[in-house]
Image (cartoon, rainbow, N blue to C red; front, top):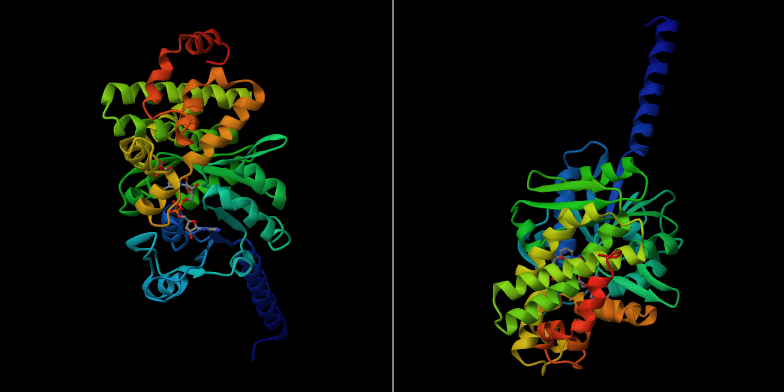
Length: 386
Ligand SMILES: NC(=O)c1ccc[n+]([C@@H]2O[C@H](COP(=O)([O-])OP(=O)(O)OC[C@H]3O[C@@H](n4cnc5c(N)ncnc54)[C@H](O)[C@@H]3O)[C@@H](O)[C@H]2O)c1
Ligand SMILES: O=P(O)(O)OC[C@H](O)CO
């Protein structure tokens, strides 16, 4: 038998080891992805590949699913958990066995220290209200959502909505990120926007980065989020140009003018927005990819081809099978801000996109507007904004 002093030392060592384990466990972050659409599923796959490798994260990634019944009669959640595939929104791609689909929102977020929000933006206010009082203290959040809300007080970015309703810090991740391409591991870049805490931004970068997904942090949360939000309006304009078969030069002109309006609008709303942000993946790169291969572009092309006679709602339901467009409602929200603030003439492209979407103007107006020289004179005259 060991002498009493040695036994005491052994006991103390094992007590310390236990305490270290407990303390290490309390520093291990649990991640929940709130949303399970096309991008939500890819985000879960990216994260799940990293939580298996990184000791500071719990292996399991919860993914909240807005439950639905598939034509087979099965629940989507059950099928995801059985097959490890989101057969409706990302068919053919294995998410990783450590992704657990959960239709119960409260249960999905209960133990999480890190929340990834990735639903269509129109559902976020309701989701946040349901989450009040349901999340752990000290939770960190990130929004991958490209969109905004317009309140009586003015525009409200989704990260701000999350921060205000849930009382938590919220970063954003935006970029040239067509989900289906990242799902098959084609190289892409993304931008994490953060307000002040670089350490937290680095943690999100670590959670998302893979050899085929390169993520860069930028201290400009509003600029990054507005890029991701506004590019969807430019994508609709590009789709109209495609539908009217106007060619590459016209489309490039639309992309350039759109990017300029994105920067001007962002800087008018938040003077802190940096020019350099528009050269990150969330800026020019997202404008390019979204105007070439995004869903907003695709549906807007069909809308123009039909001469505006079939509504966006009808085309969205038929062409996207449950996936959601963000551009049409964002164009309306941007228009509300422009008319409320008397800025309509400063943003002819944004204003025209909305008027085309609601049928007030024909799709061809997307280029005709440039003949209204007064608009352009005003735009050019507003050098401080451009
Ligand atoms: N898909 C992409 O390539 C991509 C890339 C980058 C960013 N984003 C952004 O990510 C966000 C989410 O898009 P997505 O592509 O993951 O979704 P999606 O458009 O593929 O799918 C729609 C989702 O909304 C859910 N839904 C339907 N009704 C709902 C309700 N009432 N409440 C809550 N959820 C409901 C559906 O279950 C589904 O998960 C959007 O802001 C989008 O702009 C998408
Ligand atoms: O398919 P869209 O038009 O929603 O765009 C997808 C991504 O936002 C592109 O980065």
